[in-house]
Image (cartoon, rainbow, N blue to C red; front, side):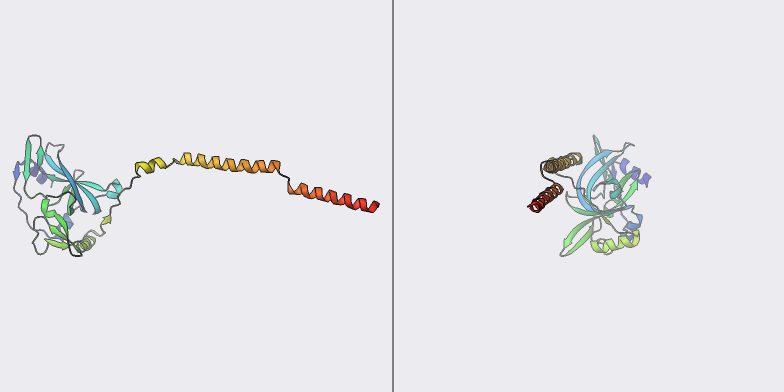
Length: 235
């Protein structure tokens, strides 16, 4: 696999010949599957000097791409070929996307990078036909058995072959600048609570110092009653 990628990226023009592969076959060869939206692309030069196209996707669902472990909702998928300074390497059969377009992509992991499996044949574009979301293959859109498939049916096939469901990618929510200004650190909030509590306790202590305790009031009333009875006995 590494040799094939190297050859693809070193030839100035590479004509790709595809052999039709069913969805099930591509799933077995794929390390990961992505359902998401295309954002942008750029050209990069790899460590060995070869050129690659790096595409960025916002993930909705995935399996095998470790979005939960990395804590990211975006992923880089690489394809051979591209432009770097005065070098141009053209590879026929690469997928072409419009920003915001929803896609399904099969991937392989090579040297700590995700690569698009089977170039355009491993790519499906998601379109709406009435109430159904349909996957349309980028290379063989009219192929009876693999060119078009319902997205719902595709997810069922993924569960059967991969032994697990495509997981929903949680998008990290960040507070706005206004919300951040209105929020107090825990230490400040605790200090504020202590200040309020101290003021309340001080009020209770002052009340206790200036008021008459009920026990002394009872003693005083009892003394007055005893004096009254003694005066009547003397009369």
